[in-house]
Image (cartoon, rainbow, N blue to C red):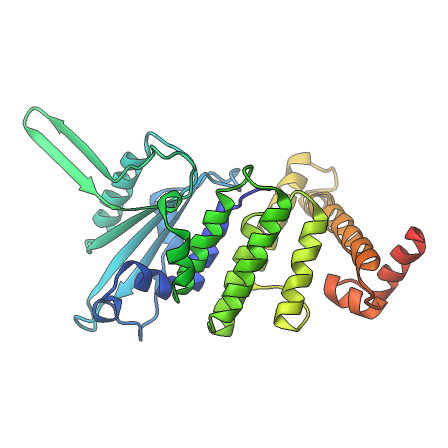
Length: 323
């Protein structure tokens, strides 16, 4: 059951307005929601260049330009860090982000540290340094998911609360069985649909719920996909956050291909990387998915092909080989 913290990058964009409303009770008075948010990922990368070989960083950072209600030209910056492990340098890094961002934009900054780790003692909320009469202290907003109350989150009508609940369930990894995890994810799915959120947010949150914590057994993935299809009363569709994952896998495939240094050049390397890094895994997952559906449902070949996004001929081939 692997947790994918990098998905926070996508979900924060999908429900950023709800993020603001979640943390600020008077958000409507503070921020102008009629003006679009500007996500400054490229600008942030220029300030803190990412390691090109690191496809799964230990933390996720976002910088967002948000207009306030104080006037047409009045805007601030919201800096968000999602940290998935204990790090003694975390507070110092938050301070580095602050002074580099402020130096570039000269605008007010509000910063949030969302901690998704399991260490109860890891709760950095400020950076402080003093020497020979000179002192500086930088405080930032801290939100420790491990300390939150599940019942309170479940009662909330804010979509971002469902993001936190999903992350909370992920923290139980290793403490509960896969069957219990499946049950909890299905309960979250039903709660999500029952809240009456707009369709785009339901699909984004559903994608996060589906991919943030992955099962170790493929049959549980199948069962959850079927639950999604039945809950929505329509075939499971690729969602924006799913596309985010597929794009990252494509990049990993390209990287593997380039690293092999194929004699026929870069294009051949990319083809090999994609073929070996993605297609084989996708084929195996689709094959297993079809096998499970054939064994556990009475769906016809066309229905199964639609659910798995394969051809009817593929389903027929699996059916023949498993009889």
